[in-house]
Length: 175
Image (cartoon, rainbow, N blue to C red; front, side, top):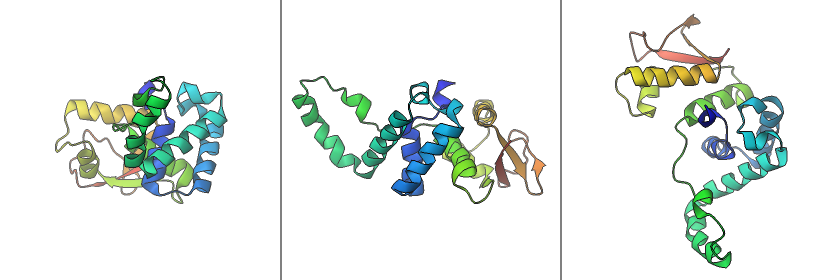
C-alpha cells in the first residue's frame, strides 16, 4: 500500500495540473503535512521542510522538464558520477494520481465537497472500455484507501461494479 501514499512528486504533478500558484502550493503542502500525515510517504512525515522543498523541486522540474533533463549529464560529470540521475529525472507518473487528485480537490482545494465524473471517463483514464474484475478491484482498493464514496444523482450510493449505465455521472465524496 506504500504506492498509494502521497509523494512530493505526486503533489507537484497535481499542482502543475491544476495550475496552482506558489502561495497556494505552500498552503496546500502545509495543510497536508499538518492534517493528513498518515497519507504521506514515510520519508516526509517527520519533516515539513523536506516535504515542502521536495514539492517545490518537483514543481520547478515540471515547469521546464526538457531543459532540466538536458542539463543532468553535466551535473553528473561535475559530481564525479555521485548523483543518481534516475532519482532526479522522471517520465513515469503515478497511476494512482487520479484518486490522489480527487482527494486533494475535495479536502483542500475545492469549493465543493465532491468531484463528479462519468464512469466511462474514469475507465478511459486507465485505458479501459469495459469493467474487468481486475479493474474493478483496482478502483475499489483506491476508493477504500482514500475513503472515497461513490454516489449517483440524488445521493444514491452506487457500486462501480454493478452500475448498469457507464455514462451515468458518479459523484465522489470523502466518507
